[in-house]
Image (tube, rainbow, N blue to C red; front, top):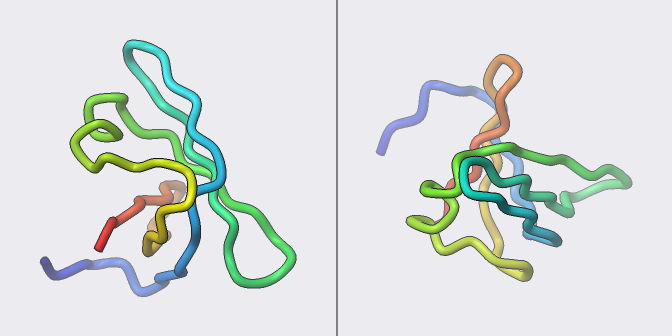
Length: 69
Protein backbone atom coordinates (compact mmCIF):
# COMPACT_ATOMS: atom_id res chain seq x y z
CA UNK A 1 0.00 0.00 0.00
CA UNK A 2 1.41 3.36 -0.98
CA UNK A 3 0.79 6.21 1.48
CA UNK A 4 0.38 9.83 0.50
CA UNK A 5 1.36 11.26 3.87
CA UNK A 6 4.97 12.33 4.34
CA UNK A 7 5.13 12.01 8.11
CA UNK A 8 5.29 8.54 9.63
CA UNK A 9 5.94 7.77 13.30
CA UNK A 10 6.26 4.38 14.98
CA UNK A 11 4.19 3.97 18.13
CA UNK A 12 3.00 1.31 20.56
CA UNK A 13 -0.70 1.01 21.46
CA UNK A 14 -1.10 1.80 25.18
CA UNK A 15 -4.88 2.00 25.58
CA UNK A 16 -8.07 1.30 23.63
CA UNK A 17 -11.52 2.67 24.57
CA UNK A 18 -14.48 1.59 22.41
CA UNK A 19 -18.22 1.99 22.10
CA UNK A 20 -20.50 0.70 19.34
CA UNK A 21 -19.50 3.39 16.81
CA UNK A 22 -16.09 4.93 17.60
CA UNK A 23 -12.85 3.92 19.32
CA UNK A 24 -10.07 6.00 20.90
CA UNK A 25 -6.59 4.49 20.65
CA UNK A 26 -3.64 5.98 22.54
CA UNK A 27 -0.03 5.42 21.48
CA UNK A 28 3.38 5.76 23.10
CA UNK A 29 5.77 7.23 20.51
CA UNK A 30 9.49 7.97 20.51
CA UNK A 31 10.16 11.07 22.56
CA UNK A 32 8.36 12.57 25.53
CA UNK A 33 4.98 12.78 23.77
CA UNK A 34 1.78 10.78 23.41
CA UNK A 35 -0.52 10.73 20.39
CA UNK A 36 -4.09 9.54 19.97
CA UNK A 37 -6.36 8.51 17.10
CA UNK A 38 -10.13 8.14 16.81
CA UNK A 39 -11.30 5.48 14.35
CA UNK A 40 -14.48 3.46 13.89
CA UNK A 41 -14.84 0.44 16.13
CA UNK A 42 -15.29 -1.66 12.99
CA UNK A 43 -11.83 -0.57 11.78
CA UNK A 44 -10.36 -1.26 15.23
CA UNK A 45 -11.78 -4.78 15.17
CA UNK A 46 -10.61 -5.43 11.58
CA UNK A 47 -7.07 -4.36 12.52
CA UNK A 48 -7.22 -6.32 15.79
CA UNK A 49 -5.39 -3.49 17.61
CA UNK A 50 -4.68 -4.00 21.28
CA UNK A 51 -2.35 -2.58 23.93
CA UNK A 52 1.23 -3.63 23.27
CA UNK A 53 0.92 -3.71 19.44
CA UNK A 54 3.47 -1.66 17.50
CA UNK A 55 2.03 0.40 14.66
CA UNK A 56 3.18 3.08 12.26
CA UNK A 57 1.31 6.36 12.79
CA UNK A 58 0.71 8.28 9.58
CA UNK A 59 0.00 11.95 10.22
CA UNK A 60 -1.98 13.72 7.51
CA UNK A 61 -3.95 16.95 8.05
CA UNK A 62 -5.75 16.50 11.37
CA UNK A 63 -5.86 12.71 11.24
CA UNK A 64 -3.55 10.12 12.83
CA UNK A 65 -3.99 6.84 10.94
CA UNK A 66 -2.62 3.67 12.63
CA UNK A 67 -1.21 1.06 10.21
CA UNK A 68 -0.53 -2.38 11.69
CA UNK A 69 2.33 -4.22 9.96
